[in-house]
Image (cartoon, rainbow, N blue to C red; front, side, top):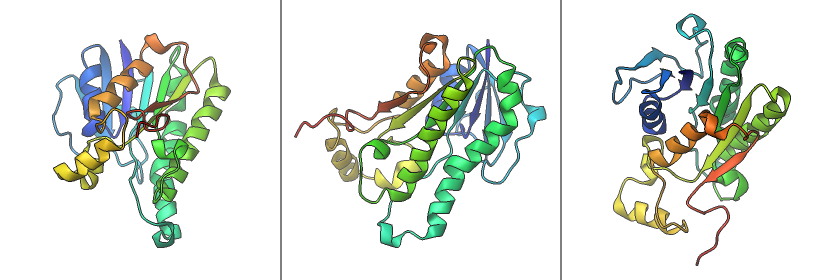
Length: 231
């Protein structure tokens, strides 16, 4: 049984992942918000990655799997984005991740072969207007993951999932009516937006031993958006 730490797993993809993992693993969810559904087999601790230092005493001695969910969808024209907006997106997506990683590194090193999963966006590989701030931050995550994967191989495996838009509370303002949902779906070759289980199942795979020969990868889970043209 593995010890899995999810940062920001109280709703959306994180909550779905916790449910998938809970039966066969010891799962700790560290989040600033209360979970939408409390799972009996999951330990919940209050933690805001942007401002808090994680309490290591509340975590298991060994961490075998780690996922960092906090992020942002700050879509505006470049001319309307202040330098502070770029700093805020970089803080929550990158610097807070680094802070947590440094804190838990001894617990990761205590595991035989820990697996780490970060979240990026399709907008890094597929240039999109109005994504300059979030794409900059997520591109840094991809670079960080590849560098760490090389540095810590073969001890640790580190991979990144780069999704397109997923129907979660974070994306609600872009998918809050049927017209928006349909327009977004039509942009994807598979003609739908992602759902939380699409991403949670892939993360579960990357945390498991089934992906034991994968590291340093950026995996596009995006309905074909980044690689296919169908119209």
